[in-house]
Length: 196
Ligand SMILES: Cc1cc2nc3c(=O)[nH]c(=O)nc-3n(C[C@H](O)[C@H](O)[C@H](O)COP(=O)(O)O)c2cc1C
Image (cartoon, rainbow, N blue to C red):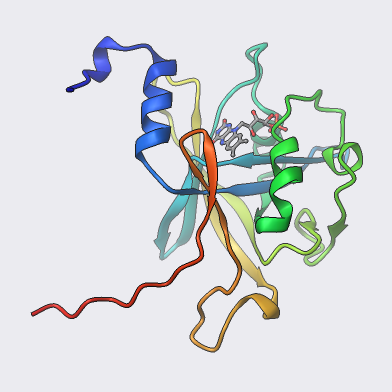
């Protein structure tokens, strides 16, 4: 089968790409609006970009009414976000926070998610997550007609829960990843083969 991306609809491309580019880590993003209302939502069009400057990229779309998703709106307004990496125990509530809600609704209150302030200049982390990045908006990318906006975010600080990293700087939790329409846990290390 050879699929011509120019000949299929955007929703079909989305399904194919989500099933083919796997696994994708999940950025569970906490933002605040200008009135300090907390917003939490998961995003899997998310990956590291460069370590100099330390940057990552997240692509965020629009709501069904055509307005920017709250996370995009808040990052544009405040230039900040806190990206949490969820672990196994977070899966259910992480998924719940993907529900489309009005921007005046605080997902932490709506879904009883506990928060913890680590860095006073950034939104709080979700209590108990193993890793978080405190980021500033670095650059918004213009993808021409795209409804999805890739944001380059600069990592200013990283929080690591000491119980979730070993002496070789390897994470010891099971990060949740998206594979197509499902989730998986990344949990196995494989030794690097020697190059002859
Ligand atoms: C695992 C998962 C990954 C998602 N990844 C993305 C993504 O990369 N980009 C996006 O725009 N929406 C993504 N969504 C949908 C958003 O989470 C959803 O639209 C959410 O309501 C946005 O919330 P907000 O308006 O509070 O920002 C994803 C949903 C799930 C469950």
